[in-house]
Length: 140
Image 1 (spheres, rainbow, N blue to C red):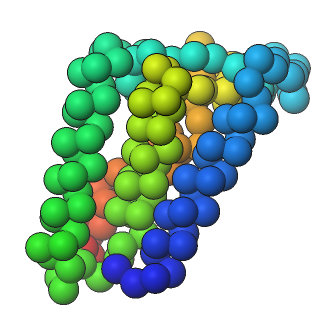
Image 2: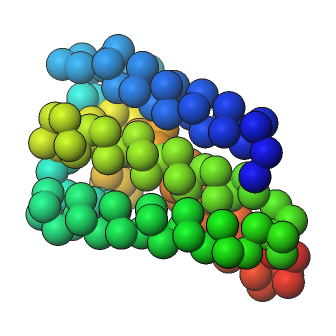
């Protein structure tokens, strides 16, 4: 990984934390009956699954595993962006879990009763889908 990747990760973490600070205790209707900013305290993981201690431990272990993988496979990896997204998103949510005891979710899309999420969740999901797509296409 180069310096650019570290800067991108830092920007994502700061953006994630800043957006979470801006929405604390706020509920804002953006598009009626479709898109809202709804402050939520999520003590579980994706979709509220799991408990704080288990999810925090798993997140730390996965983060360490990804970093070790990147260090070991550095020369073989041609695209670091999905890894940067996963690492920065995981760190963003870990900051919440460790210092707040919950993750702040706020993006509320009223489609099929979809759960609220945040910037870190978007990064993690995008990174995982990108890696999966690249593996299928054999481009990683």
